[in-house]
Image (cartoon, rainbow, N blue to C red):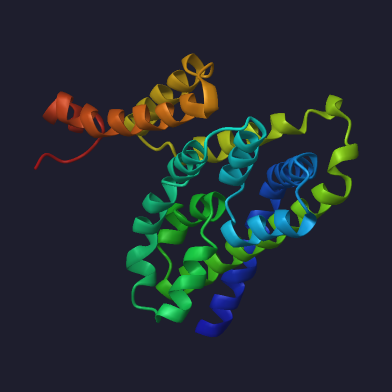
Length: 242
């Protein structure tokens, strides 16, 4: 019965991921097309795609390369963009730690925004560890396949897509949809607002530094707001007093 339940959870994860492909497809098309525009070989583009499996960082790196940004700036930008995966990893660590390393490493490689957003729902938290791992694999593998295929498609036809289609506009919409599903209390809402406002006001900075500073502003807000407000803030958040 447990094997059947795990198999069912795997395919449930695949099905739940499918609606999010609409945000992955234009993202991959843009990454593939940008790589071609930068005179990168298809092998190099796909090597980056498969090796890093981090679309937002890959796209940001390509944009900075196009702007002739310094190597240090490119590395710093990609590292900061991917810092969220440290939070994701901390969330999944208790679930994956009992597994052998040969399983933990592939699971860590497949970690992505969509899989994280789908796997932290209350419904999944109530399932057994085996079922949660199976569901995670379903979402992560489905996303990986969709991402790789979309980049391949971008390499093949991305350069010929009319700019009037504005595919780039669908990328922030996809992330916005995932963001809204993860805002579960006022603290997270305030952090999101602080980061968003900082990104808007600092967008004119060169080398994508406004994006980095917006992330820093959100992290700082998340750290200091509970301390400033103290007990009263915790009660507003619905947390028990210690």
